[in-house]
Length: 403
Ligand code: SAH
Ligand code: SF4
Image (cartoon, rainbow, N blue to C red; front, side, top):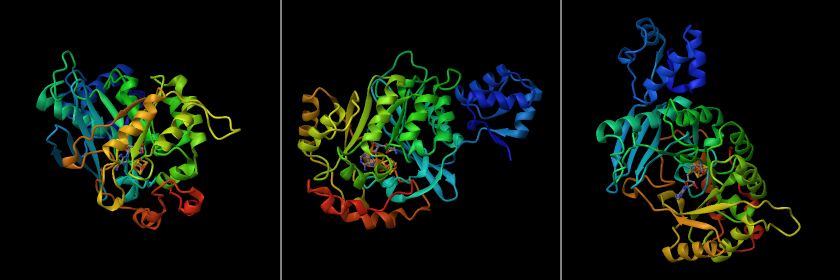
């Protein structure tokens, strides 16, 4: 079995090269060939010694992911479906904007968290992606689009001086990145490395449904920008939407955010909030969010204060969800409450919805090893439609996630 060089960050590639008797600068050259030039053919790596090229050919490869499909939206968004073997496929989405290109990358085939409003969650969990499979998504998109369009040509406007197509990576595709931590961190390091993709820490974002211990580890190991999927201002409602909340309730999650901030590349946390009609979108929910993030938790409880921005995501429907997108008026009224309290709030534009590339619509093809569809069907009627006294709605009996 040959070694997949996309599995290595520069440090581990250096260690591997040392086992071949090669010095660090050779690892740097090899790393630059792979990530900066998109080379997969060792024979073309002209400044490496012929003997090393021979050894690489024998023992290593740059293992790209087979492309099952590539779809382009009218708005310029591009979605790839990559085969990750065993009947599983994951999706990656490129979103061109005026001043930058953003790539939304998957971290798992499926997802074990099982959020009610997420198509990936409804599919269940199959397996973690390897570091190489995470990096291969950026490797493929950056070099394919660069060859097609020239650097910086993929945006809707020119970006003079830019040498790359993707300058922003968000771990917001399929899967919960912090439940695949060991593979995630070397991938992030490769994205950031000056000899790799050279992205700034502010332009690499990990989005999480709230795996508290791993937020703490990320702070130590690789503190990139953090987005936290909040979706509800209280534990009862959040449990019904994001089952992981039973393990890591809101107070603990906010505590982890507070601890993360001193190491974060920005001085705020982004809270994502999926707007679901009649579920979490009234003005009292918004007022509760203000209290929650401004240090006023339940009476008598010490509560963290978390400088934050809110990103409201209009729910992107998919057939099995049984949920409805909040009206534009509702979203704007909700945003106004947050803004009046001094919280910067944006409403996410839906991109690529003609090719099902919007947030939460990524489905890939996943062999469910967790019977998630069945679990979600059992939970179908537990989401409160109005703000009823929550315990009375029987939410506490919702089955837990496999997380
Ligand atoms: N597992 C991570 C990252 C992937 S999901 C997380 O949950 O944060 C990326 C974002 O899309 C999350 O904020 C998620 O809540 C949101 N999302 C999921 N399904 C959605 C849907 N159907 N409509 C809108 N946003 C959705
Ligand atoms: Fe998993 Fe994120 Fe989807 Fe929840 S929203 S099921 S954590 S991918």
